[in-house]
Length: 320
Ligand code: UT7
Image (cartoon, rainbow, N blue to C red; front, side, top):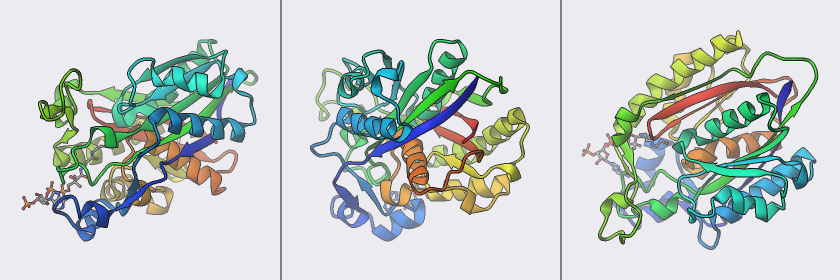
């Protein structure tokens, strides 16, 4: 069986909020945000819902893959910030794109969510239960941000990215090298709790709260480790990889990881400058951007890796 990504799509809300606009809400500056994170602007949903963003990204990915929605048999949506809990966002996407033959469910693994969705879809394919899957990362993080907290509200953005994954029978290739890790004992460094039944005023825990320095240290230590693990499983070396697609949390984190791995920054495409950190949407939006820019050629070797709340981290190796 050969598993490939056959189409990508994305959708960002219309409203672009730059750092200067944020600096009118909290005590910060464009200079501070750019120098610490690389972020200049982000998109913020106003009229758009997570379902709308996900459906639009999904339709674009289907068009890119050139397959009708009826051929999709599995839809996995990764989200932690959809406006709806029930029905799950994936079922609303199924309805929105008319994928009547698909099973659909959501998962939440925070910023590693797209990695987990990919691995779950590949697992279903290897079990013979899916041939064409649609995986989506969508976030409306502005729903759960405290716009008075300069430590968090400057970082995040809203958006959706989607990919169609297809399994074709034929020459048996080695399994896709994938790794996944969690450490729940360190969950307290990035939280958003008790959203139900209380107003935000009654419940300050209902906003994203973060120990930024701890997450920074975690990311620069664990991502190079996970990349090594993936390369070993793939029997490949960092030199052979064309692109490392990493979760877009902070430009300094990615630069530090590139240095650890000993590879040039050009191999690490980035989009946090215009999109901020979109949690589980950041990797699929980046993937769609470089795909549409024509940077991905058949046979190119990619390592894709994410990290985030939970704590969770992981990745996979893929030939385009
Ligand atoms: O998807 C995973 C989600 N989270 C992350 O990826 C976060 C990873 N962490 C980071 O990206 C960085 O830790 C941050 C960008 C969040 C913060 O950068 P930092 O260099 O670690 O700054 P810091 O938290 O150590 O704060 C340094 C100073 C503090 O002032 P004092 O105590 O030195 O006087 C902060 O109060 O900067 C202050 N500060 C700000 N100043 C202006 C914190 N936020 C801001 C702000 N504007 N927005």
